[in-house]
Image (tube, rainbow, N blue to C red; front, side):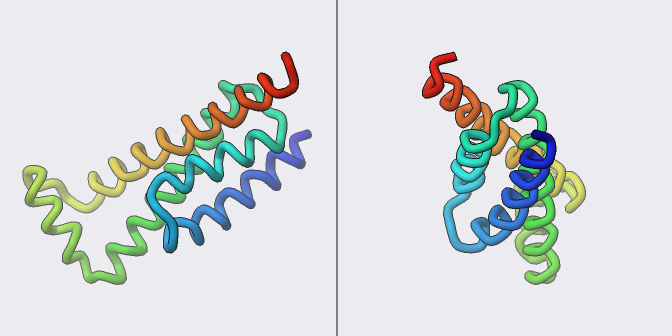
Length: 118
């Protein structure tokens, strides 16, 4: 069981990084719901796991965008929100990504229990 959860987490990270490049922001929630629907986990456990994974994926993608754009966008957004530095912006981005994918995982886990009649 733990082996399948680990494989599901790796699939989420790999496809999540690819999906963030080409699909809308909520694609991580759909991917998390699909992963937790296919691999049985408790709802609270699925939320926590995918909250962390989604935060890692969004934070790393935010760092990647910041590096490739030479910090132009992050400096403008930082000024817009009251002189926030890049670290705070990356952490806030990770929290938003974590909540999004965590709720998606919760939906997938609860949908699995509804379909199975538990």
